[in-house]
Length: 342
Image (cartoon, rainbow, N blue to C red; front, side, top):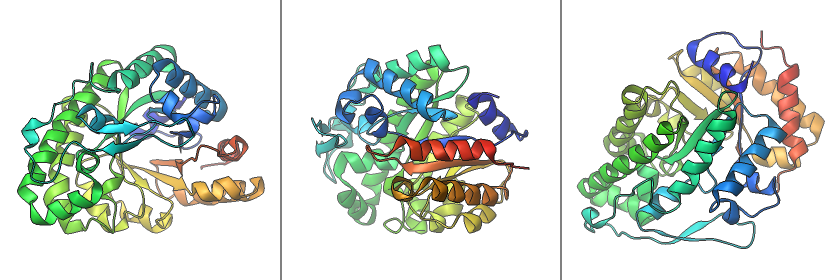
């Protein structure tokens, strides 16, 4: 069974020999080809090579076309990104907007021309052509709230949520349009998408605030990809312990959510009542980086045992650091192959 077939079986409720393996490989993929994250994030050929190497080394069931996943849309709308000669991840150093500014003055990104969007789209196109039948290719997208946070800064956005909610709503509407356009460009190339929204993670965002201001544009975007474009799997990923937001996250309409390593997995899985929702449980990358191989194998087995609580379950990792030892990640994958899920 290929990785794509394994995920398709999971979504449709069919049995698979093991859950899909979904490591979070972003800047670490650059290390796999001996390049810097900044170099790979600006070159479609390097990005394709890094993703191909990720597939060869770790055999994940899906590939995510992304490096600095929260920068791309904001950069295309006018933010300035700093790139490094070191192994640091590119970062935004100049934001184009302040709370209260005219949102209509922002340029609406054109995925075919703006910023580095064409770089990631070209890498996705080539990967889809060469290995898309065997592995799910997904374009990394910021959700509207996280794109907004990069446009004005996290702290100013949180303050604006309280002081200028109508202005924030207009900004989130702008971001939703941009995210939908970028995601459609991936879909037009045969790829899927994955939405990231860790700027909305608790404790900075309360369930009430999430439901009032963040949920509407997020649900709109999820519905666009699931209903309008017909994608069978629309992951919505928030890092950290999202247990306080879990019910609201499910209201977005996503059918793939994350139980990150900071949450208690058994309790989290038991709270997801909808059997059609796929839950990915993450291993702690700090543990992976420092543990012995027997310790990693034991922890993998523990999580797979907990995963038996759901028929729709994935095992992944938190974001792997640039210098993660590959053998430690491979140990997870090989343990999964030996584990009897039934």
